[in-house]
Length: 452
Image (tube, rainbow, N blue to C red):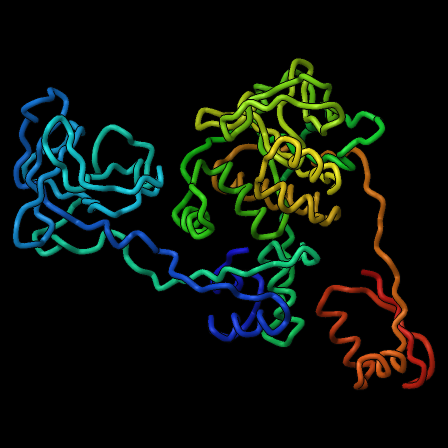
């Protein structure tokens, strides 16, 4: 699980610094494996100036550029961008740099018989725009040559090892709650996301009553007239800090909420859904092309999300390309569901699929977060992409398996070896979000009923 101090502070009111947070996390059993800069591999991108751009002697569509990067001599770079020209300030990536969009590591290479030392970058390659054709044109001066293009913000990320029994800490809010309970700050109240939802969800959703059904509840909201686009800078930075690639605002929002609240969401292009969503057991031999660009052939009784024509994806594991969102998407169906861990584990093992959503669902997601995820996701999409949202629809239900635990203070003392007061018990349980009842005499045979 990866997070940062600034992200934690979205949920935790604290004066603690990064090292204090890391130390406390380890003390409470959430071991910090490492702390690293989120700008890793970005130091090799620098501001440069093209001194001379001429036609490549062996290729009509390529240019051979003499580039000033602030060193003693000019660097020769082969470039395919038509806007590469004399005097242009651009972004140069040296050999060894890793391109954000493709994760390709640059090396000195011969291109049509001439060695190219690095490359000149487009906004698309740096995940800053959708322009694939031209290199970035900077409004800079001679004094800027050689400066780093990506400014170091000093933001560092914390990589935490989460044990299988703590799925609640696979979201930033869960980590913040544990830190608050340990005394390192106060957990902020969950925001109430007010949304103007006037019309009924036009896409019907049903969960088939079948033996071994892998879905307990399926929540959805229809959002029309969206303008899907690139994410704002703050969201891009959050996604990059997780080691993921920004895709589009809608996809990035679902990924952000998955890590923020431990609540996976999925967005469908509503116009590519054939009439309705049917959650059912798959039949042996059915197949679909997934978002990882692989084709999967299904066995019997896997949790298939389908419409009237085909399988759209595997519930809680991965969606399909046939209903995936694109920049041209105008109407979406946002899903927030609960899938049973045993079914997720079985299906992902057979098909050898490993995704962030699968990782969370197989360990257990809070079924009560369905509505919260939809409200948060809808609010973010409306704020960034515009549009109008339908009323939230939830079909199915999940059995409430929360248990009441009796905690006798005297027994606690005998087992643990030290006593704890009723006021301290109340403080700890309240900070963890538990509800409780107290019974018994003042301080003798004190019994607390926990509802976890």
